[in-house]
Image (tube, rainbow over all chains, first blue to last red; front, side):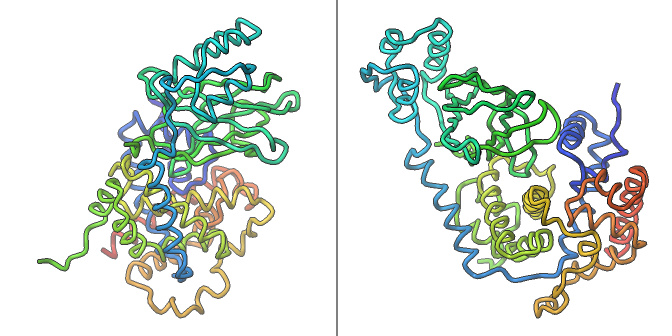
Length: 250
Length: 183
């Protein structure tokens, strides 16, 4: 059965739906040709609305800001700022689990044996092995700095290059959150569509590994929000980062 | 030799190939309109400039994944500006403009010297919008420029949700017809 969404297409075209409703419509449009045709016609009308605005001149410096930002964005793809992690540079480190994972993040170094010697639980060992395995062919990474009540914490988004390996976020120092609340990882597309990638609660450990369920391609921002529930609109952003489109990778 | 400017589609293809010159051309073509839209939504210049920078950077990064069915490049770029600006507006709930302020022109908009440069498109769309009954026009403007959801509009305007949807539907239908007649 195909439940058409014609009743809400005008609001969708105007951007006047809540996030959950907008995602529902977007998902429907993928599979429904007639609604998609109607949505396209409405989008064309709504797309003329910017022409109703009186023109204003931005400051001349804005042009250079835009070009400067794009120029800076070119650097990671040519200079490798988006770090690739490899097992080729294994270095010995006798550190605890947290420190070892931090070494993964900071140095791009992985020492499986060192981890095995210091890891305290089977769960940690399995978790670490999975991380190492997914990074065997390298990954692109982006770091999100915690803000507000989450200052001092952070999370690194890893996008493994190996086929079939899911992206994940490795959080550190997540604070406890109130009962009933959850943290949500979102991927945000250039047109500001928010896609829920994972929902979780801090586990109280120094480090927490959270796998995400979506491909990163097509998104340019990752955010973590503190939410009242695992559904509906996003709450307060506690950390976020721009993420370059993987298609721009060399 | 041809002095013809590259089409928007050609610029976007160059953007996908990481051509900064194409980005400069795209900015020269739509930067002012993008800024004007962001300013109209946010009502202040600093935030509007941030939105424009953010939107062009998103287009720069997202160009390889651009698909024509999302709209033409101009519409796609301006939809990013719109989404970004509304996103900011919705987070700044304490600064949300009151309905009547949004429904009417921003103070000073008509006084700016730039208003004299309005083009045909501007006059056509403005006329189509102004031809709507006030309730339909206000609903569309509050939704698009004010960033209100249809549920919020129902509360703000004190009318059932179905009425808000109806005003949007009929208003956009009338606009579509008016725009078609003018072409």
